[in-house]
Amino acid sequence: MRRDTEPEALRLALIVLRGLRGWTQTELAAAAETAPSVLSEYESGRRKLTRKALDRMAAAVGVPESFLTALLPALRSLVVAGEVPSSELVSPARGGVLAEGFGGQLGALLRSTGRLLLQPRESPPAIPTAEDREKARYLWARLERLSLADRRLLVEEGAELRNWALSERLCQESLQAAHGAEALELAELALRVAELVPGEDAWRWRLQGHAWAFVGKARWARGDHAGAREAFARFRLLWAAGAAADPGLLAEPELPDSLAEQSLAL
Image 1: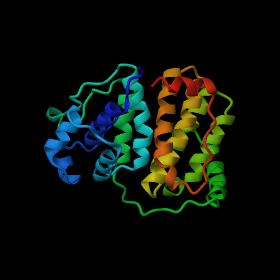
Image 2: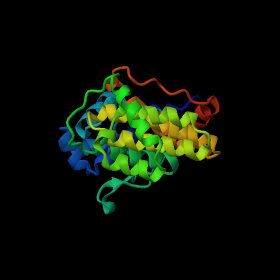
Image 3: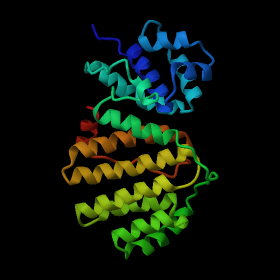
Image 4: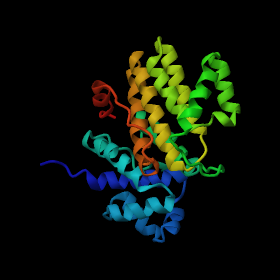
């Protein structure tokens, strides 16, 4: 008989949500307007947690439903593989932060992506348009003749370079690069631009997910298969989390079949 993975995946997802904020059970219970004892029973598995209740917890934490939709399949895979982390995932000794119970690539993914999802943004929302691509063409012409160090410096210091279409353009240029090292440099620069782009968080997640796909391609081409799998996992999670904010500007990256298959093992 096939094991029902859903209850355990939901339980783990709840612990992840609390860990992303670094909250105690009391703090999350207050935000979700429920009793701490109920939350404790959910996390221990003594009380059945439903997806509806989990969605309410996610809303209290401040992450979108699409984040859960992307997260749950990875947690189900852990359960099926018998790699269920310890129940002590949120460590009071470490200030309530997500502990090392989720190991390996998934653990790194959750911690880094969680920080990204909950990072406050002060920039006003920017409305991306197809016309931004024309500006990106000139921005790339400006960057193309520079050294990698100078490109990075300009991206870090130049607000005009924080353009979503420049990230997209850099991703495409990485595919045309003559050398693997250059392809990776361009893809990583695209990712950095995506991290700095102002606007709504969900759109930025979508853009960053797009760039992670090209980082994965470049890593795969250089033989860094573990790094490629990690990058592709980040792509899948952020791409899904930002889906609702994409006005149809970004095409979903096509990845090698072998890379996609390998990523499913995460």
